[in-house]
Length: 216
Image (cartoon, rainbow, N blue to C red):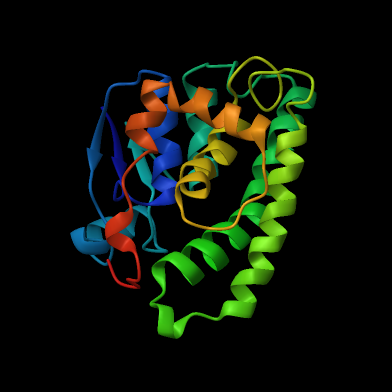
């Protein structure tokens, strides 16, 4: 049985849950981290010495870091529609995965979601938040332009790992009360994802209770 450790409200855990449910893999989900604790237990640290989620165990194989987990699952369970075998095709997907991890996620998740939504109003660094929001507006406008040709998903008409890592941002981006440019094509894409049961269950986890809270 594939086992996944990580709290349901964790952004990086949500990527893994979404993919696993898209792939219809039987699995056990163990809530861990945040209010659930457990990350400093010796048994957990033996799986991931960094003490962070997500972590999966698949038979005798243990994998940590969300993008490593996504690639492992797509390759191990032979789902080439998510991550094809051809190096050139993988590289197109990997480029977007790396961009999401190194550019989009730090500005959106760290600076906007944590800096604005999760930080009490009196402690917010407003200029820093506004600068990050402006950068995010450019990032999401770039993504909006990807759909000019009528494609359904980021790289065509097939859901891939690129959609998993980028689409996970959209629930929070479109549901938070923040300034956003008009992005009709990206919003249509978001609505297509909303119609997927795996996305609704894995990603659309209410986060209102985190407003103004730096703890869990």
